[in-house]
Image 1 (cartoon, helix red, strand yellow):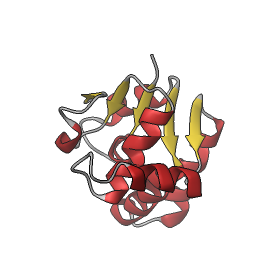
Image 2 (image 1 turned 60 degrees about the horizontal axis):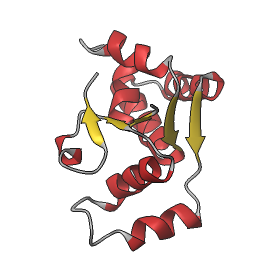
Image 3 (image 1 turned 45 degrees about the vertical axis):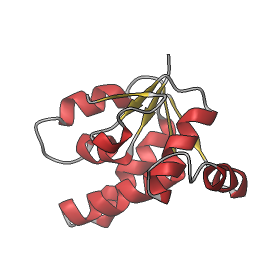
Image 4 (image 1 turned 90 degrees about the vertical axis):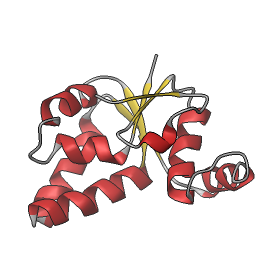
Length: 125
């Protein structure tokens, strides 16, 4: 069983909130995410902490983790566009969901409820 980790979980892992420890624990295990999530997380952490260096270091730390980081390339983008009418998701969320599908993730870890009722079960840390 491998989890896909959404950007909001990464953001909560590196900012002050009640879910920080749970999100960090999830990031210490095997997981899949993509470069789009990392960019989104870096941007949000930078705004929340008012520190782009801290935000960049947080994201760089994930490159040393047990996670698989899938690159957003033309193939992933094409596969997402192929499914655009099947799922009621915006293109950013669709790219993340398709990443999870293509990497055989069994759980989609996210605080976003619009991932409910899809093929992959959503889980909140």
